[in-house]
Amino acid sequence: MRRGWNGRFLSGLLGVAALTLNGAALAQNAVDIKPSPQQTEWQDLEFGVILHFDTNTFLDREWGDGTASPQVFNPTQFDPDQWMKAIKASGAKYVVMVAKHHDGFCLWPTGQTDYSIKQSPWKDGKGDVVGEVAKAARANGLKFGVYLSPWDRHDPRYKDPVAYDKYYNAELEELATHYGDLVEFWLDGAGSTGRTYNFPKIIETLRTYQPNTIVFADTALFEYGDARWAGDETGKIEYQNWNVIDRHGYIRWRPVEVDTPLRKLHWFWHPNDEASLKTVDELLDSYENSVGHGGQWMLGVAPDNRGLLPDSDAKRLRELGAALRQRYGNNLLKEHVRTDENVSRALDGDPDTFWSAPAGSHSATLVVDMPTPITFDHALTMEWLTEGQQVLQYRIEAWQGGQWKPLVSSYAIGHKKIDQFAPVTAQRIRLNIMTSAGEARIREFQVFSLDGQTK
Image (cartoon, rainbow, N blue to C red; front, side, top):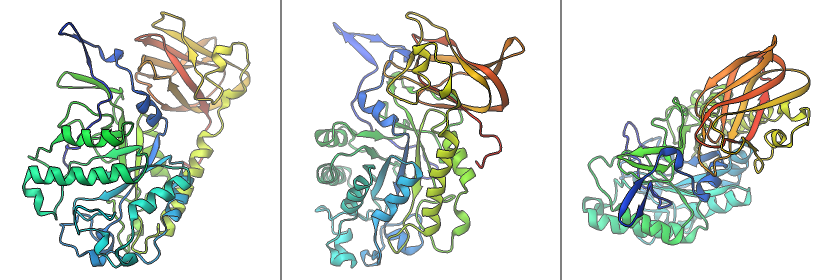
């Protein structure tokens, strides 16, 4: 992982922010930009896990310097299926394997360097961590992606940009052709300050073999990309989250992915470190401020030097999944008075249906009538984003004392928005879309009573 550097980068070529007609560029407003089908599918995954496991695991290190001997890599109980079962139980939908971290040690039998598991005692040098993890992920219903660090502190070719770019692309081609469909290609710019890689060639290499892979990178160096970093590793989006980003006048759909580790302040496993494990409360807070702020949540998980997830980590992941199901498994609006089929489509729990505002409208209300009063303190709202992010300002309101009482007043909804407020009891609830760029479409509108539950 990078620390304190704003340099994640790279991108795919899924779209552009200007149209050209007879040589003249026609500027587009941010509200005109729409996601690609690959991006909407990826955003629906919502929650992923990134896996850190290499020589650092065996040396109690967070940052390797490229001098570690491959001989130290020797897990005695390597079992990625055990990892995946715990990850699946957490509610995650995909995993990204760190195939090469900044130390340059490769977790697959690459043909580009001997600094890899081929020189380790594990399985007599004939193992393939990336391959086994990919197989275990898919066997457990999880999509699979890879992380390939551009910074390499071991390989001598790094001093020669042309030679190293050729080396890096050869490694990328191996990963892109040997491990099936990749849901995400995750790039980290740590250590790359002042270094310019051959970005067009890297993109060309990836897209030749993986045309649908979402490329994650920061916006700091490159105008184009498929997904972007939130700006830090707190696990939260602490601003209004709009999916369209403007970089040097280059406007494109680029949703946020938030990364944060399961253990505080580090990504690799370390011995005698139980106090660093985040509580369920802390994880839920991160989830609600990432996925619940329209972003993607990438949780860092690290196997230990046995090749297993520590029992405490696996237990915490299962607890997280149980807590998410408890909190968001019972939409109180589902049992509404069914008088309007359009409204019912926003309350049915089916993400493939949606409520539509009147044609040509720039404001609208979605009113839900309940058979009896309900008490609630959280709301979950999702936009249908195929036509872009339309809602510019909204309120959630309850009918009390003969008038609509505002509970929430905010701006961006996007993929998913979770709002919290003081408990309120009402029989009529309203989503008031005060301003929208075009016709608003709401996939889901849900409320919950979570006050007093374990967070």
